[in-house]
Amino acid sequence: MIVKSLELKDYRNYDRLHVQFHEGINILYGENAQGKTNLLEAIYFSGTVKSHRGSRDRELIRFNKEEAHIRTITDKGNVSHRIDIHLKLNKSKGAAIDGIPVKRQGDLFGMLNLVFFSPEDLYIIKNGPAHRRRFLDLELCQLDKVYLYHLNSYNKALMQRNNLLKQITHDRSLLSSLSIWDEKLAEHGQIVINTRDSFINSINEVLISIHKKLTGGSEELLLLYEPDSKAEDMLDILTRSRDKDLILKTTTAGPHRDDMSFMSNNIDLRKFGSQGQQRTAALSLKLAEIELVKAAIKENPVLLLDDVLSELDRNRQNLLLNSIGGLQTIITCTGLEEFISHRFEIDKIFHVENGSVTCNN
Image (tube, rainbow, N blue to C red):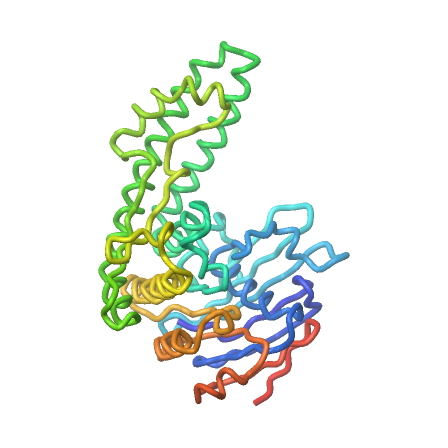
């Protein structure tokens, strides 16, 4: 799987842009705040209909413009596809595949499988649970449309239940309606929990060996899933927590409160790991993610690296660069020196400056 080209119109700091990528290693270099990350974001948006930064759609539209357009040409299994996304300031976004509008934006998932690695991912262990849940959800939604459906359904039911909890404060007659949303949450939440559990078991199968390799065999890394509720007990837990939920006016139990821990030689890296251990574990997780996507789709995903090398020491830089052979990789950086010093083979180089992209070779 590769991204052949990207076209932008009025996206972020880009007026108009057309870039053709190499199927191998592509470097986007330039000073900070010139638009390098915006290009990776646009590619990521084409595959997930989300910004990796968590930005709202309206924030992606160029200043003083009413709409923006992203067009990505992909090649999957030697078949080319065109993905179009329209972002509008005061309307919902629209998407099309090969010129045919999609009814549900979730239909785009799987058209372009991506692994995104940014400096923020190096802090996945020390950051809060929401960051780790986001990692699980973004990867699972790309690989499993059934999970996407149940996650979206769970989030909608969660919003409805939370709104109802607030309304009951003023109208106790609505109390009986809670059972409807309890059942909805339990129905979809059980599948979310079970799918997350299965995914973490799968990633552990490749994570252990990768981390041993990165640490010279001195550490064994294991992910532990920490569900807030057992899948089979969800409905009972929601019923028992109802009084507390009514007081707090929010749902206090369910997979929206899940977490996972990183155990290295039986030590919890969240609490006791050094910064170096945490970064190596995050790198192992990303490399394991690549292998898991390969196995799931029987193709290589596209790898997006957003200024990650500058955050890694030379040893971890080598480990990462030696692991991306055969993958189309699009890398942002401020300079080319780090690649030259590694004698790293680059297939195409682009210079990014103030919303303009120039190919240097």
